Image (tube, rainbow, N blue to C red):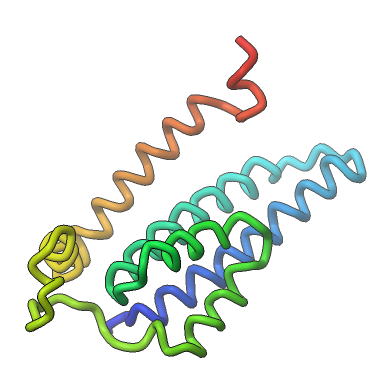
Amino acid sequence: MTVSPKNLYGFVSVAETVTWTGLIAAMVLRYGVGQDVSWFFFAGISHGVVFLAYCTVAVLVGLNQRWGIGRTLAALAIAIPPYATIPFDRAVVKKGLLEGSWRTETSSDPRDAKFPDPLFRWFIARPTTLVISIVVFLGILLSVLLALGSPREWGSA
């Protein structure tokens, strides 16, 4: 089974929205109602992991679909406000910006010879290596972020 850029991007945009819902519900219970919900940590971690996965997929799809830097940055920024990824996903689908398959082969397009296209195609042609590399990278990034603690604590030592 082959996962297209359109299907993968649509899946992670919905997953990002679902985890936003869990995080918002936990925040309302914790800060609005005063209940210290035990699953607040898990809601935060799950949203953080899916947020990072969404950002990774947005960059991969942006490279594959040859989105400009502006649209790719917009896809990344749109993950910050709650529930914005789905309207963005629908807009790029409507414009036909997610059509096509993964670019694993060199074409006659001169951009195929320029960095990062050869490296991108190498990883896309090896999905297991790509997924393992992304998981390792995100695991390291998440570990560093957890070690740093809450951003509110960064300035106070």
